[in-house]
Length: 220
Image (cartoon, rainbow, N blue to C red):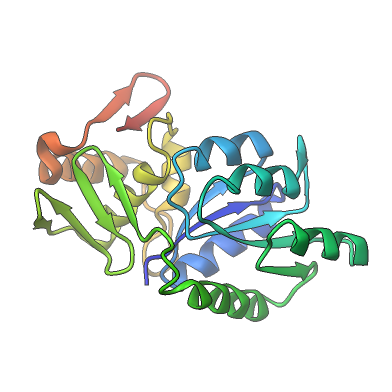
């Protein structure tokens, strides 16, 4: 499946549960806690879906939705307030769906699946590009000069994380949070260095993955 999702949620407990559940379903998730972080993550486009908390520390989900209007990204709003006015405004702003907290996880996953399924064949962006590498998020394949690059599931997830945050400095903790293994376990911190080394070797000069001393990594 390998669809890309931008999750904008400032509640750490809710976010961690959603990230785990969505990644278990095969989605590549980028998490932002504020409007500013969401705009930065979405500045290059490339997300198939954005799940937006309505109330954020520096604004609202509507602020993120307005920014996303320049991209081809589907939107599901989350809110703790079941307010008819907000529901109307959400759909008028172009939202694809709306769900009220507390929600059942299976219901949200079903709505995500339905929303993404409805967008198939609509011309929505299903490819990401990082450097000279092209990522087909529908097929889950990576190409350099039209040649397939053989990546493991974790290497692919790591590349998606960099591609979804092109040009941004990502701390080791941010990267580790985004690449849970298939069993839902955290990747060891010292193992991350190994995976980045392997990814660099497989991508060669096609993608520049830069170590930013004391801060983390940046790819473009």
